[in-house]
Image (tube, rainbow, N blue to C red; front, side):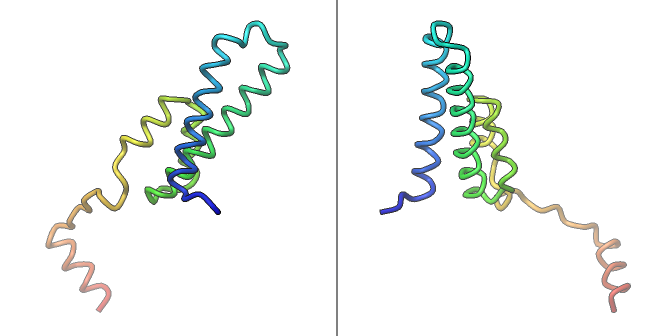
Length: 104
C-alpha cells in the first residue's frame, strides 16, 4: 500500500526536522563522520519532502531545494501561493489589439 504524496511529504519533512533537532543536542558527542552523515540524511529528507510539496503546488521540482534552508525553506514553500492562484495581468487594450493585428 503506497502512501499518498502529501503524507509522504509531511513524513519526510517531519523526520528531517526531527533529525536536525536531535543533532543539535547529541551531535557534539557523536563521531564527526556520524554527525555529518546524519546531517546529510536530514538534508536529503527535507529536500525530498519539499520537492513533493513543490510538485503538489505545481511549482517546478527544483523548488524543493528550499529544503536545504531547513525550517525557513519549508515555511517559505508553504507560505507562497500556488501559481494557479496568482492573478494574471491583463494586457493594455492597445497592445492586445496590436498583437491580434500582427497575427491576422
